[in-house]
Structures are given as structure tokens and as C-alpha cells.
Amino acid sequence: MTFPPVEEQLQHIRRGVAEILPEDALVEKLKVSAKEGRQLTVKLGCDPSRPDLHLGHAVVLRKLRQFQDLGHKAVLIVGDFTAMIGDPSGKSKTRPSLTFEETREHGRSYFEQATKVLDSDADKLEIRYNGDWLNEMSFADVVRLAGNYTVARMLERDEFENRYKAGEPISVHEFLYPLAQAQDSVELESDIELGGTDQKFNLLVGRSIQEAVGQEPQVCITLPILEGTDGVQKMSKSLDNYIGITEAPQEMYGKALSIPDDLIFRYVELATDIPTDDLAEWKQYAESNPRDAKHDLALAIVKMYHGEEAANDARTHFERTVIQKDVPEDLEEFSPATEHGSIGLVELIREVGFAQSNGEARRFITQNAVSLDGEKESDVARTINLAEETPFVLKVGKRRFVRVVHPG
Image (cartoon, rainbow, N blue to C red):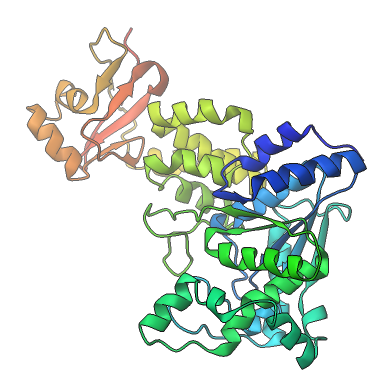
């Protein structure tokens, strides 16, 4: 089996990652893989307690898909057994566990949704349930496993350390979670394990346990936690700031438009399959023309999960039902008088006649009374590139509209 050159693989693998631990080991694994024509085993453990996937979950799934596209084998571990323990990552108190039946049912739902991102070809994807081997371990096996790790190192974990200092209870079974996850790596003899930054401790325990039993330790690759559409908290269904990967195209498109401008490129890099070679151009595009960039981002996201036709229909639906909503049919057109090819939003509002002064125009903007093509504008320093952004509908207040067109 042949693979792309190592440097080309690294270019794709490094995209959007938080850490590669250690990177020199990854380089060596890729070289050996290319020399021997052997697929690397890339492991991702999934939590079946959350069967509804969103773009935040898809960040690490997309990285797994990149490894598949490079020719390697993805192994999706459904933690039906470990979910009965409850992952303490990021938790300030003991997490409720699930029944074995619940984890199996959620695991099936997870896999069905995950294959909207992953290549389901049998040569590139394998699904395993860790209950198949963890259920078979005897108490003696567990004791031997636990003997490979110390309490001192376990308490270095932030969640445990903080809870211990605060007098919060820590159940002994919680110490077993990272060890059980590490045993998954031993079972698979995994070369690489992926996870969010909140999984760094668990992934590193896997390296330690593999080394303790005589295996070559896996490389750990962590991915950033994607912020939700509010731009503040991590994406979460409970916070209602999520974009679900199975949501209707129109809903997905509209939600993508609600993300803050300063997160456009982060979403492009982490949540889309836009080619890595195009990222530099996209970064500039997002900074110079966030309105159009956001629409193109929304289009790209919907296209990934629903196809090109559905994505185009979603865009048309948005333009027809949102942008054109309440817009008068006999809308007047206005061509700004400028020789620079661009105009400030404050200046445009005043020049149109919707404000008597720059100060009044600024107040309209800060009061969320201004929108361009249905999107609220809150930046008083917003500059509009007339060549790239016209035509568009400027709305100020509830009833004042004008279609802004390119000069000349």
C-alpha cells in the first residue's frame, strides 16, 4: 500500500490540532508506515452517553477522516463499558453512569451519525465496543492493570486535584476510567489516539500503559474544543449553541450565520473539509469580507452533510424568507458617492439619509437597529467593500430600507 509523502501527510495532520505528543514519534511512525506499506491504526474513543452529534464532536471526527483519506485505518471505540464508569474529564463531581443496554443503544446511534463524516469502507473504518474485552477481565487482571500507574500521577489530573483540595468526593472507580481507556489502546495496539484537549490526560495514560506492557506507545493528538454559536461557551446541546450534524439544511444554514465574525476562520479550519492549501486565502477573506465569508461557510457546512443541491436550496430559502422578509417590492436603490471603493457603515447610514449625523448612525448600530441583508451589524467601525459586497439591502430601524448598489 502506498501513502502520500510524509511531509504532505504532516501538513494535513497538523491542521487545526492543539498538540501532537510527541511529534517526532509521529514522524517516525509515518516513515515506517510508508516503508512497510502498513496502515497506521488511528483510534478514537466515543462517549455513547451523548448520541446526538454536533459540529463540536465533528472536529475530532474530521481529523480521523483526514487520516482515512491519507490511507490509514480508523478505529472507532464505542465506550459501552467505560460509559458505565463515567468519564471524569472536565467534571467537578462524580458523573452519573449508564446501563450497559443504554450505552449499546447510544453507540449504534453514534456510529450512524459518525459515518456522515467518516469513510465507512471496511478497509478504512472499524467499529469496536470496549465491553468486548473489558467485560472479560478478571479482578486479578484489573489489579495488574492498576499496578502500572500510581495514585500520585492520577492526582496530577486537574479535575482530581481540584476536587481533592475542595473536599469533593472522588470515587475509586473514577481512577479506573483512564486505565480502562488505556487498556483499549493496548487491545488495539494503537499507533495514534485522537481526542479533545480535555482528553489529554487519558490519552497520555494510554501511552504509559502501552509502554508498561512492552508495546510501542501511541502518539497522542489533541484537538481544540469548538465554541458554540454564542462564541463564548463550548458547543453544547444543553446550552442551545450547537449546530447538529443531522439537522435540516435550512436550520443548519441559519445557525451557521449566527456565529460571531471572529470565529469564521476557526470554523473553516476545524469544522469543514475546505482544502488545507486554501486556508490562508480563507483567513484573509473572513477578515476582509465577513458577511459573504459567513454565507460561504454556511454553504460549505450544509454541503458536507446534505449535499450540494440541499446546500444551494438552503441558501435560496434563507434569501427568500429572511433577507427579503419585510423588504418592500418597490425598494429604492442607492449608489454611494465614493472614490475609494469602500465606505464606512456609519458614513453610509448618514449618506443615505437614515441618520442626521455620524453620532446618530453610531447609536443605531450599537442599539442593534442596523442590518445588512438580514444580518445584524454591531461594529461601528465596519467598512464595506462595495466591489465585493454590493448589492445588499440596508435596513435601519423597522421600516427604513434601501438597496445599496455599486457606484456607476
